[in-house]
Length: 216
Ligand SMILES: Cc1cc2nc3c(=O)[nH]c(=O)nc-3n(C[C@H](O)[C@H](O)[C@H](O)COP(=O)(O)O)c2cc1C
Image (cartoon, rainbow, N blue to C red; front, side):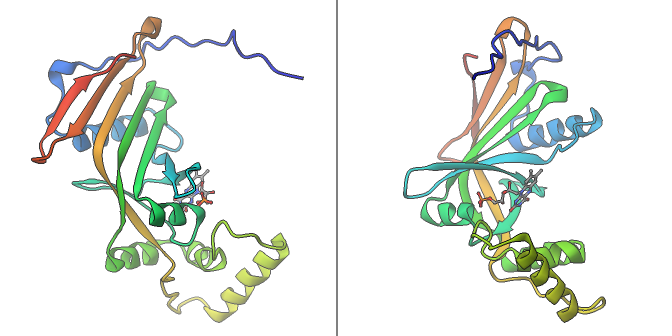
């Protein structure tokens, strides 16, 4: 049995990308688009799909949360031993994608991923709720097989006893931040008649950004 979606269509008419009024740098434009997505009530404005590809050539994609926009790119936190962590260790080239339905906008960021400084991870880890801190300890190695939900819950309960309220939960050495340092950022704005606007910023060898319009 198959399900046919081929008659489902939306017209995209919520905005346009004025190529003559673009900022010189792409990351401030990303900040601006995130702020607008929040204003428009996008339910998970920081959720981005992260695509990686390890040495086996098999791409993997999953959602992670953007925790910071830096001067160079975007930061997310995860388990370094996870499937994505292994892909990144093999091949640091990656891409993230945002889709904000409310704005009919998509942003694609391509670049190279590197671990953030341990002190930065430590500061972020200690800002997280204690339950999330303990969950990071339970989920090692993230993406590994576990026998049952009960095993996970028993591990969590044991950690709760080991680290009662008021005690410090140390940052796991297998967990932390990655920064995707952008070399290319594409802004996509849906338009009527499938005549969408696509502007791509590309980083030049001297560090300056050039822009081009792409066919939709
Ligand atoms: C809304 C949402 C937010 C998520 N945020 C994160 C995150 O910030 N970090 C993370 O490691 N996993 C996050 N996940 C879980 C990942 O999508 C994924 O299941 C997990 O990281 C294991 O991925 P991997 O096996 O490809 O390494 C999130 C999932 C969803 C749906």
